[in-house]
Structure formats: C-alpha cells, structure tokens
Amino acid sequence: MPCIDTGRVSLFFEDAGSGTPPVLLLHELGGCSESWRAVIALLAPDRRVIAVDMRCAGRSEKPPGPFTLAGVADDLDALLRSLNLATPVDVIGAALGSLTGALLALRHPARVRRLMMCAVAPDMAGPTRAYLAERAEKVRVAGMRGVAEASLANSFPTSHPEARAAYRGIYLGNDPAAYAEMSLALGRLEMTAADWGAIRAPVLVAAGAHDFLWPPPVGREVAALIPGAQFEVMEDAGHFPHLQAPESLAELARRFFGN
Image 1 (tube, rainbow, N blue to C red):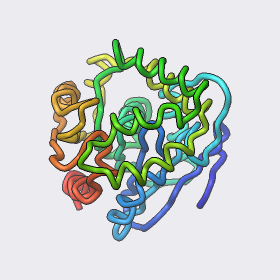
Image 2 (cartoon, rainbow, N blue to C red; image 1 turned 90 degrees about the vertical axis):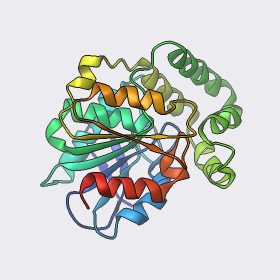
Image 3 (tube, helix red, strand yellow; image 1 turned 60 degrees about the vertical axis):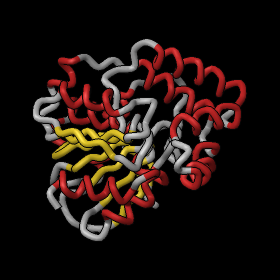
Image 4 (spheres, one colour; image 1 turned 45 degrees about the horizontal axis):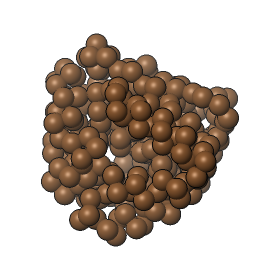
C-alpha cells in the first residue's frame, strides 16, 4: 500500500498486477481507490493497475484551502513521473475522475494513451455548480452523515441496494472539510467546447442507462465534442458504473484498450 510524496502532495495508491500499458483508475467525488476494488481484480491478471486516492480523498494528503481540478491533474502527472513509467497509461475515470482524466489528457497529453470516461458532463454550469456549493456548505456544518442519504440516492439506482449499502462506509469515511473543498473544485471547473475538442487521445464515453444525474444524452453530448470519440450506454449501471457493473465496465475497457 504505497504512498508517494510528489513534492506537490502525498498520494496513496493501490498498485496491482503487471503488464503494459498500465491502467490508471480515477475515482468519483466521495470515493477513493477502494471504489475500484472489483475492477482492479478484473484487470490486474494481465495489466498493471494503479488506483490513486486523489488529493483530499482516501488516505492521501488533505491540504487546507482551495484548489482546482487542473491542479489535481498536475498531481497525477507528478505521480506518474515519480513512478518512472516508460509508457503512456490507459485511463479510466468515474464522474469526477472522468473530468480529471480529461484534464490530464489536455494538460499532459504524453501521459495518456487512451481515455475511458464513465459518467461525464460537458461542464458544471448552472444548477450543478449551485448544488455542489450548497452541499459543500452543508457538509462543513453537518458532516458526511448529514448529506449521505441524499448523495447515495442520487448515485445508486434502487436496483443496486447491495452496492449502495457497501459504498456507504467509504462515503462516510471522508473528511468533511476535504470533501467540501473537492466539491468546490469540481463546481469551479469550466470546460469549453474548444477544450473538449483539443483532446487528442482516443476516447470512449460510457454512460449508465440509469444515471439520472448525467444521463446518456449528456454523455453523448460530451462524446460529440471530442474528435473520433466513441459512445456506449451501460444498461446495467447508474452514475457509478465501476461500483454497479464492474464486469461490464472491465469488458468495455478491454475492448477499447485493445486486450
């Protein structure tokens, strides 16, 4: 269970399996590398799999004060540099992790061979930004338990009660101040059509059929902004396909990555 101090931030990560190119897994808001446990087991037999706790999540450092998702992407670049990887990585992101993966591909294109985004929206403008700011304020006062039921109901369809119950412990384990700062960083993100169009890595956008936060038409909108991007609907998933349909996600990833 290694940690690396990149000089920017200390990051915890799970490192499993072998085989190239490595796969980098980027978690959702409220999650951590533990969110990817089932996917790691499916990919590690023939790939090196690196699942990182981003700053302010899991067992990674939680610096005080505001930051940006662009800064989180730079953290990941520093992590990959510290690992001395000889080849670009394939990236799978989930929700927040999808957007961070897109920023990694934009800011450090030599790092990303292929990018798979599970649950993604083109920007955070309007109600989403207001909702994230409101939730950040509430969690500072009421803690994680004060927002848990609403957040889990938004992310897990009623058809996945076991996954929702299992995830509850991960969610409640968040540091409220750090979670609030990550929520605000997500809310501040601004991605233009030109930004999406500048991604040069091959992209697959996967949307859960039961995701009512960022439903399939939203994912299809993102895919249409990226030259050559593929789009898939995962019929058995909601907002968190890696938790709700790990087998389907791993199968999609293998086809897209080429093994």
